Image: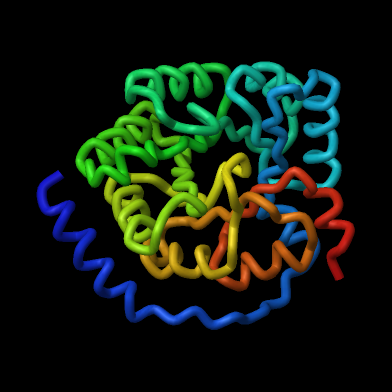
Length: 244
């Protein structure tokens, strides 16, 4: 993409002026529930656990169920007739595959009922400063998703400040609808500071999903207060149970 490096360098300079300020906003139970992607991505997850996940999403009004792509067809059947969306991760949890593999998994997930795609950025390419390749990777998945929502997992725990900014700039430029903090399978998860930085970089027209280590109502509120517009969590029922 022409001018991508210049955009990244400019945004890094702008972001260095950003100062995080902790704050807390009031989030009602129903509002919070509809911001949650109820998630089960464990490799040993069983069909009965997936079925329970779907039942809980319907019962509590969660925005979506987030699963590994091969589970999408059964989730589609489980959620039929409900308002709960289906989110599928793609090349989870590392993203270290060819773009062709990412796009093929994306197409397969959508063909079988996925409404949203949570793709994992190729962090190694980002660290190599191969920004055009990372951009092409994101853009190709967005195009393969055929107007479905695409979230890009940038794995913040593996990135320094400049890399976090670059990942957000590239994701936005590639047409992604959200940037997402973490897979939950690396050395750290979401932090309010990272969420706020991501929101600062992408602005208000791109969503920010906080995921990884969010276990309580207070955790979720801290992320939303920092700028998150979606929460990814496996302990969603406990989170809602702690709502005031």
